Length: 167
Picture (cartoon, rainbow, N blue to C red):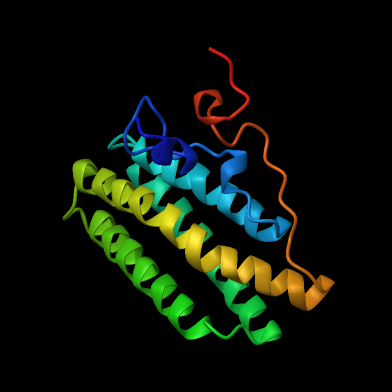
């Protein structure tokens, strides 16, 4: 497993599983809480069985609708300059999830395809959070508190990568 994979929250046990860590914290508590919940629903989707697949897709859909709507409201309220691009990306993700969910409800898609959706979300999330959501977090904190967030991370870098690590 690469250091990037560890920092992005990918599990060593499963190549396509997110694990919440301090490395994912952006410094705006509501965004961080939504991201932690996202990690939970995507992990559940990646582990779903044929019997739990519909419930996991429903939980993911419900989470994304709420999560993306809250972010849209923050962007509008604070005049976030990159809102259009950010919201377009949210819509593409939501459209994909809802298309898969609709097919699962109709019985035209099975568990392996749903697990591929979970894999795609695991691939998508670190980049989205690092670039788009971190910019939103910084923007909100500057507007609300007058400065960028201060983020303290415990063990965000594996000990072998730290300058103070001993052999």
